[in-house]
Length: 285
Image (cartoon, rainbow, N blue to C red; front, side, top):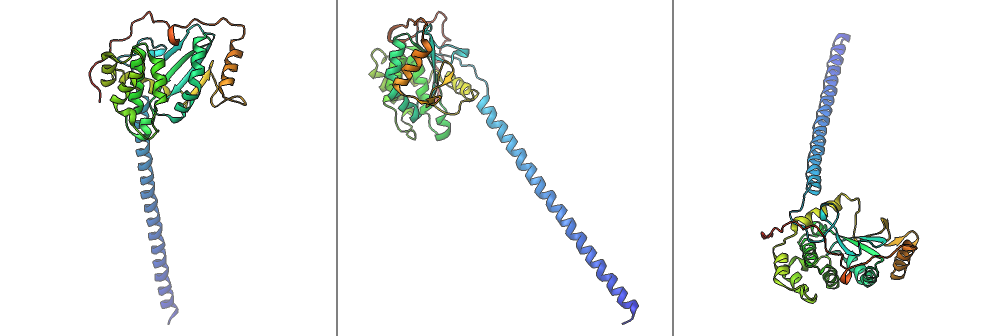
C-alpha cells in the first residue's frame, strides 16, 4: 500500500473518530439540558407546592365569632383565674394530644388550686393541628366544644372532663359531635340547648382555625407547651423536671413579695365588659 493510500485511510479514520467524539459531546450536552430542565421543573413545582402549603397554613383569618370572655389579639385566648394574679401560666394544647391529656390528668388539680388561690392567671390556647396529621375532626370539634363551654361559663370543668375522657390519639372519637355533647352532661349546668346547638353547628369553627393559625406562627412546635411568665417549664425548667411540687414551688418563687389575685367562682375570670361577636349559627361540616 502506498504512503498516499495509508494517509487517506488514516485521515478518514481520524475524521470518523472526531465525528464520533463530537456526537458523544452533543449527546452529553443534550442529556445535561434535559436533566437540568427536569431539576428546574421539580424545583419550580416544589416552590409552588411550598407556597400553596404555606398559604394554607398562614392565611390570615379573623374569627366571625369568639367565645365570650376570650382575651388577647382577636380574642384567641381562654383565660382562667384572676386576671390580676401575679403570675401567668400559658398553656398550648390540642384536645387529641396524648401528652396534653397526661399533663392535664397529672397537673389540673394543682393548677386549679393555684387559680383558686389567686396565684396564677392561666391562658389557654386550644390548638387543632393533630387533625392535619392524622385526619379526622376531633381536634377541631373538641376545640370548638371547649369554646362553647367557655361561652357558657363552664370552661374549666368541661376542660377537665374532656381530658379525663380523652381517647387514643389515633381514635377520632371527638370527631363525633354527640360524644362532645354527652360529655357536657358531666358538668352541672352545661347540658342545655344552647351548648348542644353550639357544638352541633360548630359555631366557633372560624375561631378554632384562627387559634391554630396563630400557633403556626408562634414558633412552638409541639403540645403541651407550658410557660410560666413567658419561660418554658415543660417538661422541665432549667435543670429541674416538672412535678406538682415543683410547679407550686416555681409559682411561689415567682410570686414572692407580690399581692395575690382575686379569681371569680370556680377559677373563672370575671365577666368581660365587652360583648363577644355575634355567633354564626350556620351549620359547619
